[in-house]
Amino acid sequence: MEAAVNSAEITVLGWSVVLLLVQIIAQASATGDLGPKYLFSPRDEGLKSKSILAGRLERALNNLLETYPAFIALALALAVTGKVGGIAATGAWLWLVARIVYAVLYATGTPVVRTIAWFASLVGLVMMLIRLMS
Amino acid sequence: LTPTLATLPAEITVLGLSTVLLLGQVLAQAIALDLAGGLGPRYLLGPRDDGRAQQSVLVGRLLRALRNLLETYSGFVALALALAITGKTGGIGALGAWIWLGARLAYVVLYAAGIPVARTLAWLASIAGLLLMLARLMA
Image (cartoon, each protein chain N blue to C red):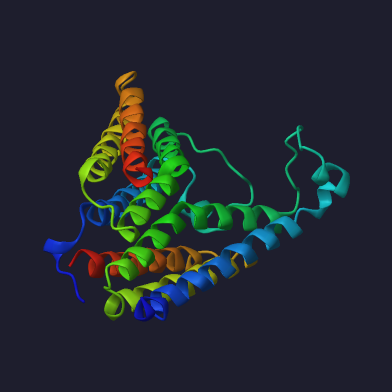
């Protein structure tokens, strides 16, 4: 198990949790215009923040959550089966970097490159999948 | 220890295939939105700040099918990995994993085609697959 614990896949998995938490906290921090009274309440009125940044961070977070379970599944499956390293490790790092770039580009409203970063994150997942299934 | 494909437990094989299903549904939804959503490439490639609603029935179905998959997908990932880690692979756990995958595949096809009732039965079958895996894990 030592080798698996120290593998790139598990290191990236740990950093992916940091990315997730940062995106959650950034998104939550950007909704300040709703006011503490509403935010601490059960939010029954379903108000939406008028902040453009909050909207972008929310969409970036939702987009991360669409494929994040697949990344977790692949990283852990590679570790469990001892298939760490090779193109899977490269794919894991590619996925992480692409997801960081994606979130930054979404927050800054940069078009086109954001979609390319999203595609790169998918390529990273496919590289991990190829290693797992081969 | 370097397991070959022959020694990959069924749960891990299905887990790998499940990521193909998820990526397939994500891509299908995205491509359908791009081609049929009526939003235009300029809006889609931009930060989408206006929150425009897309126009296609098919895109709506694919989106709802993806949301539905994501509701329980983490449960499947958890069970498949827990079975592999604890060495409890095979038996009704492996059967449940295959049932889950077949049912989720049927579900998204039926949803996209707009077929009622059978879609809900496929959803129930996917839940039954998870329960089989859970029963094996906790036994």
